Amino acid sequence: MLHALIALAAALGARVYDLAAWLVVFSLVNIAAAIGFVTLYNLLMGVVRPHQPASDYALLQSVDAAIAMLASIAALQSAHYLGYPPLL
Image 1 (cartoon, rainbow, N blue to C red):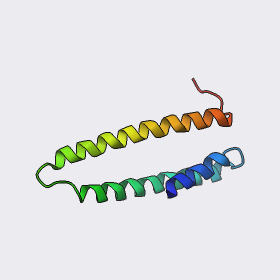
Image 2: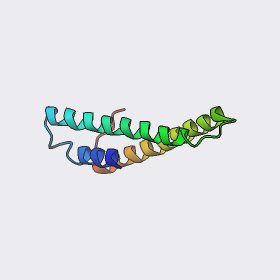
Image 3: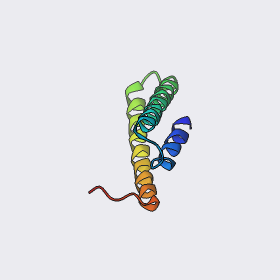
């Protein structure tokens, strides 16, 4: 949740921040995301079944990848509607 709030603040203030402030916000977003991923993986790996941890980990990775794809699509659509020009 913290990661999403920091990212939203960065997106809404993208045209207001100078380079130094943008780098600080970008660093905070990445730190919050890393803390979130480590915490999530630690919690989920604590509840895997002892007789098949590899299968549970593979399922976890697959769901994580699917969520990342959906989030990237949502971010791209948000950028489009906020008026950011296409890069490609």
